[in-house]
Length: 305
Image (spheres, rainbow, N blue to C red):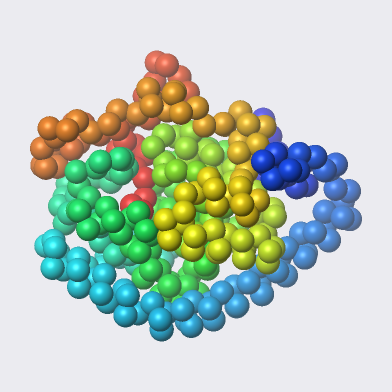
């Protein structure tokens, strides 16, 4: 079986048909592939320096907004306004990510991580708004300023979750060959993960970004993220900026089937109790591809967003 990296390297570059480009380039010869890899690595090194400086600069105008959001969180729910969580960074080096808290303080009181789903009762009313406009991600500019993250790159995952996903997704750790980012190609194209196949789709697009990484692509993703924060729908943004990669998912038989996804996900019942025990009993299940095997959400917890 070929790995995701091998599959992606066989396709030099592919843009979604909605952007008007459908041709698939021929595989590169060894010398051309080497030159491309060297150029990409040189770009990534420059990118790390430039985006770290941008992170420091952006912290100044963002600081008052972060403080305001933290004050609102403190006024509307118990607990700290910010929380730290260990994530896997570049080359599997762990670091602590910073985010604004959007869930109740007892959201994972029993120590079991759970995926967040639509209408998740653990999310506070203010937290729901902050997630919608992505203001809960602003403190990660501190991680960018520290050099632990960049503005654009694959989203970081928790070490224990990454270990579990790596058991089912071949080459999962390949996504850690670059620094993680606040926004990325997978986040712009796909909704939050709710199944194992969702994680596979994100992995494919993360590897595609690593293959395509360049200044123009990063600029478009930053613009797309800004537009989404202003309330413009994701599909309109990706098509307008030629960032749609749905054809790549089709090529690898990972296209999103809305009907099957709806049938596969068990949503929280409206009458669910706030207790951790009841949350555990009604957690979402994940179809691993076999009708006879399902894994509980506690086996594949999703990172809080």
